[in-house]
Amino acid sequence: MPQTDFDVIIVGGSAAGLSAALVLGRSRRSVLVLDAGEPCNAPAPHSHNFLTNDGVPPAEILNRGRTELGKYETVVFKNDRVETARLAENGFRVETETGAAYASKKIILAMGVHPIFPAIEGLEACWGKSVIHCPYCHGYEFKDQPTALLLEQKNFLHYLSSLYNLSRNVVLLTNGPRDFSEKQLNVLKQYDLKVIKTPLKSLLHNKGDLEKIVFNNEQTLEVAALYAPLKVQYNNGLAYQLGCDLGAEGFVKRNGQMKTNVPGVLACGDVSGAARSVAVAVASGNLAGISANEALCSENF
Image 1 (cartoon, rainbow, N blue to C red):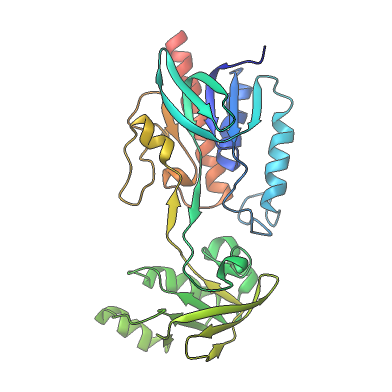
Image 2: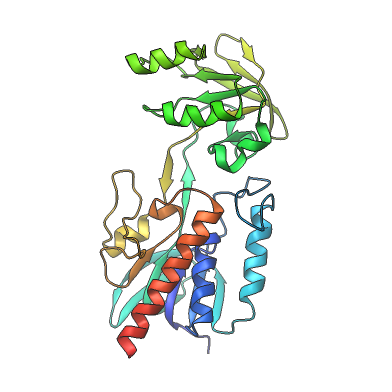
């Protein structure tokens, strides 16, 4: 009969979840990783700023991770979506899309996020390739090239300073009317930065490589990269079911040990509000795995 009881269930099998599973597998814990197969960074051709893995495709990093975890016989993978999670006797119970049910003493939430795309034709097709959210993840590849910044944020000067460090050729796009503070106006004037307030209509691209931005008035702007720090939807439904506290933006609140307000529930990676990079996700998953194992050790000692 297939195993249904585990020390720890990890919901989400991307970088954070796999990192937690590695720690727990090496700690001789029985672990179930349930993954729906929808990593947020799937469109990105490469991952950066992850030591020894700089420039490696995210999918390859995940495949390597699963291969490495294969030697730990207590770690089990299931490609299945968790639909419900609740407190149960001696721990937790989850039920999946396929109708399977599993129990565990601890649960780690690593479900990630999904970006909320504005209604601009072609933007989603370029996402992760030439429309990017993070100057650290992909900015070096577009250094000194014509660059645009879509102003989705109210306070953008800190973000803009990071882009200006990579390219002096930056145009700001408001995608419609927008007011600026006196400080913002002074900075834009000081660095002679162009602002276009015309709404965006579409992005012309070649298989995700941006060529031109087309505005509603049919004018165009040629750029190599469009930075779009989009709002995201945190995959926090299970956290809500379990009674976890959520931040104003929707992320799962946790402390430095990745523990939520619900005893036995931990959160790591993007869904916990961590900075969105593979390296940070791996680090937070490592901490979650350590924290879960130490709690189990203390309870059994």
